[in-house]
Length: 112
Image: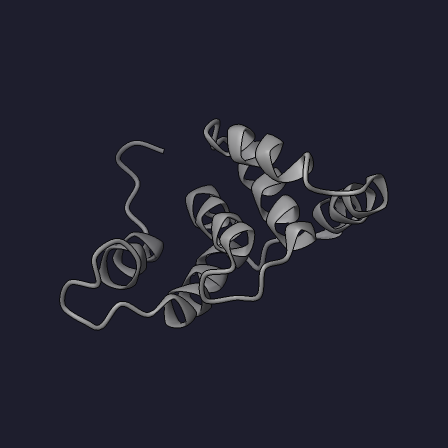
């Protein structure tokens, strides 16, 4: 995704890593990342999946983490595969099947 700039990058820069410019707030970051993830930005999907894995700004939810990381990987974020593998070993086969179903049914809302 080199050369492509998106709103999620501002969100990640402002709210997640250091909180420079605004107070660090994972809940606010998750809201904005969800909007970008919903528009099919794999980097935002991966960041949101990681937040669900860690319970940062959202409740820890391995099914949601797996779903978002799967989508990120499917849309070109090769690094998401490592995080996806890390999440999967903590899940039951039923949870993995649910995450895969959600990922398959999920449709992006389109980019503005």
